[in-house]
Length: 274
Image (cartoon, rainbow, N blue to C red; front, side):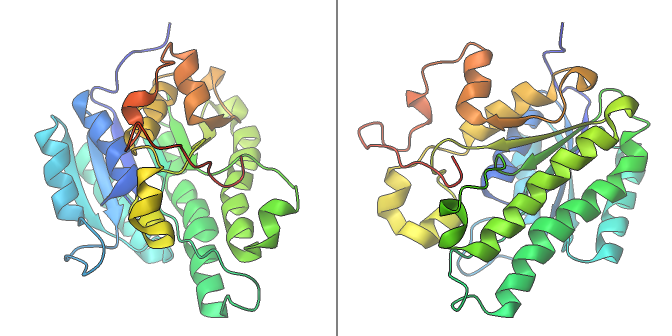
């Protein structure tokens, strides 16, 4: 039987100062987990909510222990230092959540190389780098998991045509799951991907579609509950999967998802890649 709780587990979550990363952190904190918040925002941002310090306060208010780590995951030295601090504070790392992501839904001519580099630096390099930095500690952990917020791989050209650079970068995160799951299958470290069926009410969605799109989205808590359901599973029996949030919850017996809707009366908008 899988354990039902993340009590005492040590999580390293990237991009956890807001949105989906923070929701996953809060859900773990309800169990009494210890969470390292690795994100860039140390001072309040003029357009984006939350900092590593406000996130840490929310985690502790929910019943967990928090460590605020200012870290730009594009840079090896910063990631290595953040991981070392988390290990020093918590004694190890049991779970890595690669949540940090950069998005630009722009065509080839409309995507300057600076934006291309940002998406690939955060999404692909950052995910690979954090996985690599945490692996020596995950290999020592009991029931180690890596969870990437990444889509199922689907080579239908329609998912590339409007935003080639973004799709390439997100599929890079997905390929980390595909490859690392197989590479570490016999050593007991689980690598899985989680992706939403619908749009999720985050700062990124607000920038893309404004308040109207937020109304047609689900709350980040649906991904937090789905992530929790994955992370309590036995790692050796759960690796190499590309999970969708509603399917994970259905398997856990949760079929009424109306409580996750921002506006239960609004028709939900589907997410990319599904």
